[in-house]
Image (cartoon, rainbow, N blue to C red; front, top):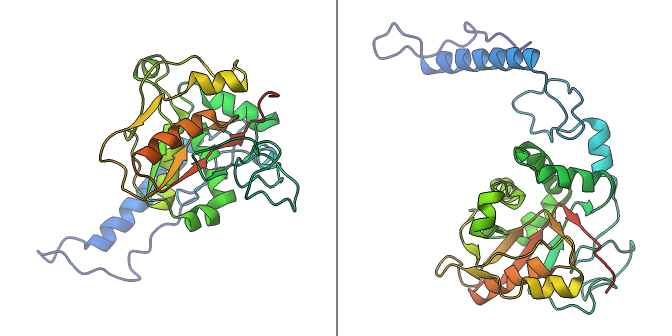
Length: 280
């Protein structure tokens, strides 16, 4: 039950006419009524886990929770393996990966580093597949919060000046209006207090789905498909590029290449999961 405000402990200054309650009293009463309203809604529609739909205990408005139950959140955070600095693939605890790892050493990337929550498998894979469905914005926000909690210090240290989502092509957006990358970008931009520019990066043509393509096909499928709008990228800026999954790195590489050509100094890729892809 929300606490009842004590309206007598610290009387607010009267209004201009001397009779109406001051703004402090109005704010206190308003906050109290909002809290009661939230409790009423939660009583009628108890909050549920964004992944397994089990009922959650009520949360206060100040609690920026993930929206996952303890079991789901524990499983989503279960991957404690460090990631390669260059591509985000899982590596050994003491591996030196500034020059890459066995997964990416032979690749050339236009981005500088990859930040991720875990590997694209198990419960995390299920969550990402579910997050692609229309109406799954809440699930994406929960995943974005987990990525932030795990990597907040590093993201602040890298200090991006803008956040961009990997875009859909215009026609693809008509058939798939929900783009998880856009939701992730908004969430991380808010956390970093830096602008989100969803229209700065454009996908110029329709492409085949990457899901069923091998590494070489993925690269050719996306060759030259992105372009940055003129004048949007600040010369020398550090750009955070948001997407849900990185597999071979082809999408992120082509997007980062376009951003580099537009003047970006560094491109940091942040994803929910690192997929390990198919054999070369």
